[in-house]
Length: 93
Image (tube, rainbow, N blue to C red):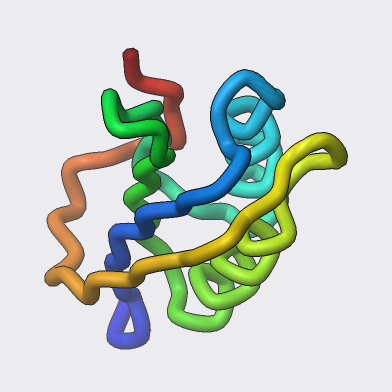
């Protein structure tokens, strides 16, 4: 698929302990994204998303909003080459 992209997102703010990873997993399913989401030791959340460019962009916008009790202050985005190594979207620990 020519328009498949991969992006890594680092989300900061009040993003841990608020159901963010489960929110991201549900959003990924809605947007047909594969990859992962995990908490980082520094308080941020990291998400890697692969899929059609339009879907990854919609996923990013949903992450930027976050779940009900979160407050996303900043989204850092890194473009990657799609690896094709993910077949689903999972929560990593």
